[in-house]
Length: 488
Image (cartoon, rainbow, N blue to C red; front, side, top):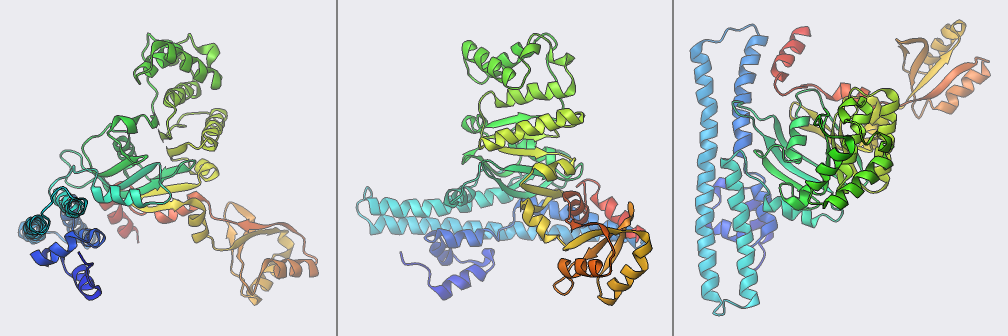
């Protein structure tokens, strides 16, 4: 079938999905790429449901901020008005779904009459094409009506078309907990590639642990798509590619370190002989062989983490997922642990780590995802983010007796400067094309003013985090916003 003509195509793509006729959807069934663009405008039930309750919370928040007492009628009327939007959205989707079913039925009948040989490759190709499109529509309808619809063919199709394929592919991950009206994570989408050290950052309650537990299948009730090397994460082949290190280390009292590892390895379908060989190899690799007969419960925090790392590596995973792995470790143990992670990174393994210690992540991470209030506010290369916030500033320090002369020069040249609170003799100045480093240093030299320090002041991950995080926890963000407004 001919492709949708340019004008027709633009009309279709700009038209609200629920207003598409049966004939228009028939055209889209034969143009999968165009169909995907239309489907992206179809709101999910999870998102609409969350939006409904967030609007109600926002309505109450505004009233509190303005010192207004809501009457029961005002609150009831607003809820009714907002609920109508949810009801209307469901009606619109039902209309779209009914038209899609009719279009699919007509297209299938048309192909059946057009091709006498239903075994021919041409017929089968055409049938496969409309089946693929119909399946995509069906999945989007399911997404609208369910909080736990997974592994959409549209997402898998996106993954398959990626030239550089990620080891971890996450699209629209949304998680609801029972008795909670809004989602804890809201349509999270990010990628992690082989050999990448990826930091997962956010305040307590922002959705980090929820995301990790969904990735490793501790949680089964969520919506979206999670692929490990292109495989849905709930399949056994995908699970074999993940190594996991939890925040807290707990071990059976009756098992030695060696026997603990051996039994854990055997649970991954290795024979006893294979498990013993791998356990010995990993304990020696991590310098824990001499402690093999002791219970891990008698170990230091750093030694316990090494056992967990050994367990995570026993089946040679492609990605190591960690939730606060260096919590409670002393500095020496932390350095040893990160050094080991860097070795794994060099071997091509992806490192996915959630941590609050931003100074450490700044040293080791090359990419990151930042969560705020259950949503992603940034995901990508760390250096690109640092450069975005780079104000091209320098730190300058000099003897107090030259301050008046230096400040006079700064004002004359219109060089912005500010004193560093923690270091009174140091100042941050803004570098520009007009006032570059060379010209400023030349002025210091000409006026025989020695400077003790003159170096670039680049933003840290912690600086950027403080600027970007607004909401924090999804559960407390309304209260925190009220507090912020009152503080102003």
